[in-house]
Image 1: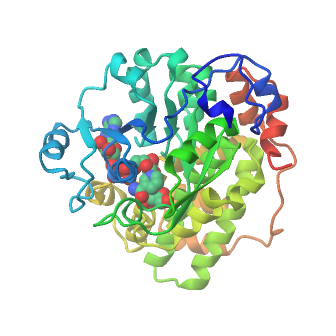
Image 2: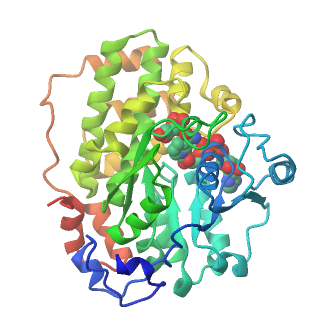
Length: 412
Ligand SMILES: NC(=O)C1=CN([C@@H]2O[C@H](COP(=O)(O)OP(=O)(O)OC[C@H]3O[C@@H](n4cnc5c(N)ncnc54)[C@H](O)[C@@H]3O)[C@@H](O)[C@H]2O)C=CC1
Ligand SMILES: O=C(CO)COP(=O)(O)O
């Protein structure tokens, strides 16, 4: 564990951690080591999840700064230690300070150990573009991303958005957290509870994933590390599409059989899409995959499930979005998912039906009938050719095409 004591550096091979051999053979930038006891953390995004994670880290005595784009949140929070817009009844630990709406400057960014991004996917590119000049590759904080979505227009995953805006070195050092984790059930006591929760943590090197895991891991919040960030990201994004489908089914009045069918067939579709994309099929069996799929397909606490439920009850999408009061990543993500499915030539009828209901005005009951009338098919047939999009992404990161086979078999 000697490596944890080293500062950010290039040409350093953390050989005691799993990672792509092709990755550690290249010049590699690592984030700075986190202090053992007390890290200085900026959480970007003061919505439900940013607030919850700020509280989780503040509760164990880290020095936390929560950036909000809403001036009202910053002023109110620093007076009352409550967030007036999200988790309004929760009393936050005293060691959290709200900052914003301007993004922090270079000097401040350089002084922190961790940057945690809880910004919805569609707003991440602009946030990172503005922040990029303040990031010093030679003194890089640990970078953690918790958003779950695919960017509209580019179909990019977050790893690619980071590469586009901050460069390959910073993308390769970034870490992603995903899994079954409703904001209100994590964190400190009061409204946000310490209910036992587990998540997946992935980076291209286990070295970075382990640092993020060490920061978050608590007796009530377990972290499991891996080196398939693409699979983890696709899991988190795609489960939102199937949560909309499950909610729709419940909203139409169908019961347990139908929901179980959607969850299981959804998992099959997700695994096929992920494998064709270039992720490991096994990642979809983890917390970020089936774990989060199960959670969000079976709870009205999920915003995506709620969008589907209300559609099933006959409400219009624009009214639902206006009145939801929170982000439903699955709605824009369905657009990106549809494009990816088409590019890869994958059979994903449930995701395609969700797209038709959301964006082509298809009647929800007709969508279910058409799905049920499809001819019989094999239960699971993983695509024969795999890895096009991931291969392109690896090239963008300056990695060899061998990386893709390591990505698909990280557990061997
Ligand atoms: N709430 C939850 O239980 C969980 C949420 N997530 C993910 O975390 C991410 C954030 O979700 P929540 O905090 O729940 O969202 P939220 O709906 O509670 O809050 C919305 C957030 O988006 C920000 N925002 C709105 N417009 C923006 C803009 N133009 N530029 C930058 N930021 C803008 C708001 O300031 C606020 O911080 C999403 O990707 C979500 O999928 C992941 C796990 C659990
Ligand atoms: O991803 C989540 C919990 O793991 C939250 O789901 P929703 O965004 O559907 O509320």
